[in-house]
Amino acid sequence: MMVLTSFNRILGQTMCVQLPKRYITSKALRASLGLSDQKKPAPFPYKEKNYTFLRSLFDKTTQRFDDNTKLILLEGPVGIGKTAVGKQLADELGMHFMPDVTMDSYYINDYGYDMRKLDPQLPVNCRSFDEKNFLETPDHFNAAAFQIIKFKLRYAYYIDALAHLLNTGDGVIIERSPFSDFVFMEAMYKCKYVSRTAYDIYYTLHRHALPDLLNPHLVVYLDVPVPKLLEKAKEKKVNSKAMNTTYLECMDDKLKSKFLREISLKSEVLVYDWSEGGNAEVIVEDIERLDFDNYAADSPKIQDWCYSREQYWADVRMKYTNDKDVLMANFDVPIVDAPELNIPGEEIEVLTVSYIQAPGNTHEEGYDPKYHKLSEILFKTKDTKKWDPVS
Image (cartoon, rainbow, N blue to C red; front, side):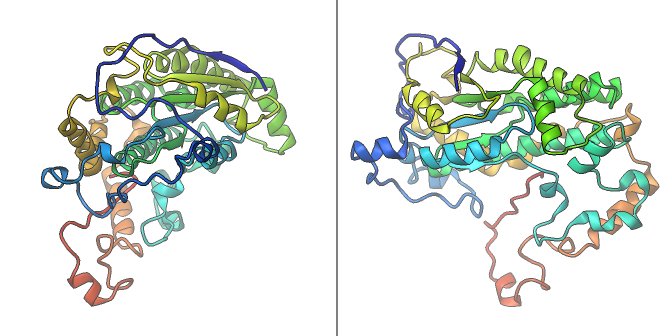
């Protein structure tokens, strides 16, 4: 395996304080240095409780930070085994791994009921459309809505990653991100799977949503040429109308010419030739060599993670812990011009009634008497909140 490139880092000394320490270290290195026994405060239960101003006076955000409190994106083409690599990296570095989202998180509710079971009683345009459907019929009427939902899911998932990092101090490795999601829409448009109007609406949402996110510290990109991707698909007997040469070449071009070029201005980037697979331990060694403090104070690569006061960290933590629904409102953009993104009112009514009456949807999470004892429901506190993948 060979490192193709490591984008240049901007030199200089940062003047900010309260920044996580400079080097990411593996569990093995930490043990050899005698750092593995260092303890930090217990994780804050951010999924159940809001992080309030009063709590911020006693629960300092940076007291949980260590050298591995970093956010790493794992990116690359589809179908190359990123999940397995991500799990190995997380294990080596002692970080929290989050695999790429699937439509399961959209269709399966909090009590495990799969809404796709309702398809037979729904109008055609209201039926589910997931990854399997896209691979089989990428030019389907619902393809555009499918990709916008995937973008929204990845956006929500990234907020969860930030909330986890800020409330636990754990480093996070997340597979795929809202920053790279646009390459799917570009490939779909190139292959004429979606209309120009749907394409434009996607980018309207993109412009609204992305500025509210913190950029990652590092992007690890696994590169596989398109011919090799097609060869791998053939070996796995993947027969997909969607994953053709044009689609994959467009994705490959946009990932390299646009995504990597833009993200390298704000994050460290390591790129690897993964044509024949590789050794995750080599990636760990390269990560350990990166000096995340080696920037000028005003460098774009450090601005998102450089706050001079503890209360600034608390404000950021409150934003991603408490205000997920506010951030998800970036997607509340009126859609009036794309037929494939609009469902007639009478069909929406059928869909709404069916979903409301579905098992597990009749009550807020934690309050359904079918699944909880009355005593459990009566004594729930107001601080308990729903943690939806998409608000």
